[in-house]
Amino acid sequence: MEAKIGKFFDSVSNFFSGGDHIPWCDNDVVISCEREVAEAEEGSSDEFFKECIMRLSWALVHSRRPEDVQRGIAMLEASLAGTNSPLQKREKLYLLAVGHYRSGDYSRSRELVEQCLMIAPDWRQAQTLKKTIEDRIKKDGAIGIGIAAAGVGLVAGGIAAALSRKK
Image (cartoon, rainbow, N blue to C red; front, side):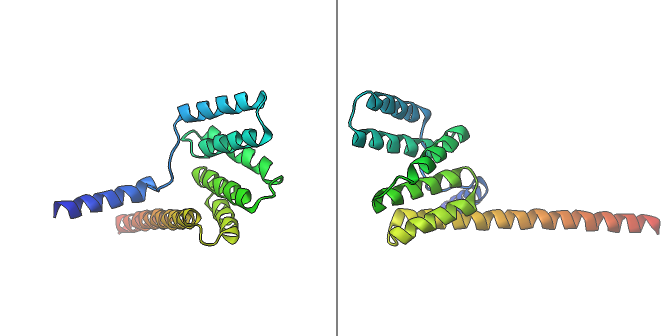
């Protein structure tokens, strides 16, 4: 019985906190990736430099800091046009979808993850992200409906109270 109650409270907590299964990245990882990119700029191969940029982009879009997420989105969007490999395009689209999800732009995130699934329909990570996005959109809709219903209830209560005072 206690386990069921614990599950219930966890479920309610996840509903209101937006619990998802997308990992977060600490600031020290971002700093380490930035250092790696700076070192790679100074004489590494172009391929290694691009790998470092991808690792930094991953860290940025998974960061808890909104400015890091926006920087990661900008880096990925700038590099997407020059991407020829379907695998690299899939990875960049996925990371862009994560970034837009983290920044609260769920419709753009869903568009990007759908593009990603057009390239690789069976990719579980993208399928999971798509479900997470859709669940978040539904949850936000339910909260919005609840707020609207509460507002209507308050207005109706105020009108009823005003009418009862007149009598």
